[in-house]
Length: 262
Image (tube, one colour):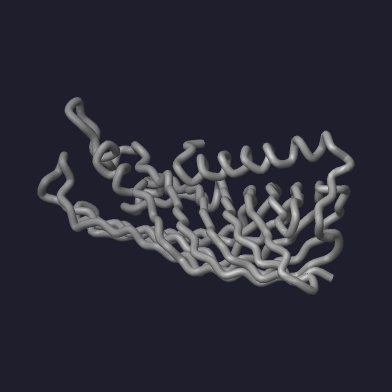
């Protein structure tokens, strides 16, 4: 997996929290200054940068061109595999329970996030390099409406602040649609696959205890799904597979939440 600047931010934040947590674990006499134990509910509003990276590919089967100087695969695959990314407003419902021992908190949190991701990447008509008299056109769309996660949490409390990290399984529903046509065959295809996908979700955040159990919290949530679509299709009607499909998906969500502890 490639780690970019957002993943680096997550790891840096986790390391920072670990620096707070480690001394507290060695000092059982420390006091937190606030009671963080118990059940809580919350709402969060945020913004997410999300992306799908298709690995859709052309299959050599006698239809697409291959020769010593190049191939249709070398031309078409980079187009089919373009990243689909975008920014979306997110809304989340949070529920969890924390236990507290001195300055250390640990617990479990459920997170349902609505995001409305829908991105399309289109290309063409463009001439084939190996058959300049023919053109192809392609379009890929990936959609998802929600992310549902369950994450164990580990935190450190000092005064009115709680610093924490969490990680756990996540599930979502994705739909991929691919359309392709060319003038060489005079045909077109539309492939569609909907899939409930499993992934992982992790977060780092900080909460501030206001009063009467109300908490203002800011966090960063990274979610990754390695396999959100799959299948194959054929273009020219000869019964042989012309395309195979797959994609991963990741989301980087920055949020502000208002939480009530009971």
